[in-house]
Image 1 (cartoon, rainbow over the protein chains, first blue to last red):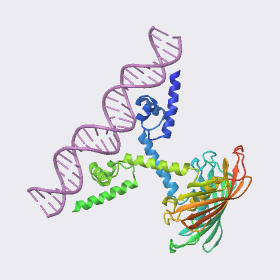
Image 2 (cartoon, rainbow over the protein chains, first blue to last red):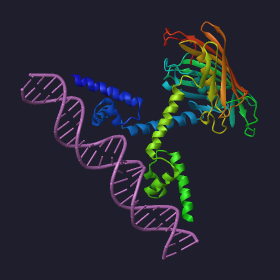
Image 3 (cartoon, rainbow over the protein chains, first blue to last red):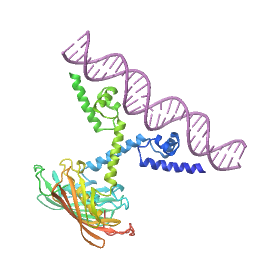
Image 4 (tube, rainbow over the protein chains, first blue to last red):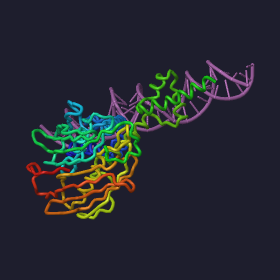
Length: 199
Length: 199
DNA sequence: ACTAGTTTTAGTATCTGATATTAAGACTTG
DNA sequence: CAAGTCTTAATATCAGATACTAAAACTAGT
């Protein structure tokens, strides 16, 4: 039963190698494992792994989607039920790539980003900038947990809004934060605006 | 001279369409513009645009690089001169994709992320989690500005470290923050750890 | 040792999305 | 109408595959 073991072993390695380098072709795999190209193709067939061009295509698609959703989206997390100037809820599905590899603990700035993004979204203005924030992390969040952030505008005086955000994972509070957000009028020249604010 | 105009026009559009959808094939382009496939290929040749598979490959490569550098990196920004437990400097080149499209103002959580990441990196422990943070955004940061964050450990009592971070763009302070970071020993069971902390 | 079964390899036809090349039409402008 | 640009057609070739058929190699069981 030596060949069976060898084959199973090869299959595992093929999967692994392809995962590490999705651009690799059957030809390269064949010479890498010292088998014929047909064998490699049978292996891929067995493993349900598509051809290299298809893998590349998917990678590109996925990545561009990701880039678009993560980087061009104006909001981190999904906005649910927003009452402008009053309150709102945002949901963020945490994933492995938001966490430290060693511990799977979600990095704080993602939780901050969700809360801050929500706080800014609540302010009914053309542009809203964060002035200050005071935040507290109550317990570590594991990758995979679903974070529900609730925000409410506590006070408002002129441009200055104070927004309180509470984030829960399940029934547990994991994060609370208080953000001061400034509404900015459109006609303010952007370069000479030396008042506080960012975001 | 009608055809010249038409051609120049088509060239412009071809470039544009490909930019919008890099996965599009010559065949599709041909029927889109009502010309032969050869014409499309001459156009691409003239414009110096590679074939769709090549475009896809590049996209995938680029994107995976990006994903790896942005998401698997344990630190946001580049660490320069870190003295564990004492002080450190981190540099972050801000880009358009970190900013709001409308205003080109860098979103606050990126600035927060750099500072927080640096603060955590300064703590000499297996795992370090942020407990609280108090931050202030002093002026908006425009995409393209180079952010230099300086951090120093103010106090330390047991696991609790207080780290102060000041971020400058050029000579101007744009952000200051104070982070409480907790060092966590390795032997603590991760699931029952209900004390504060994240990141 | 012989046979059945798995595993591997070979070979051929076909596909897609191309490059490269040659040559023939179409159009248009002086 | 000839010279030029622009467009299309046709053919050979390529990479990286799929799909299929069939032969060889190895392995185990009786």
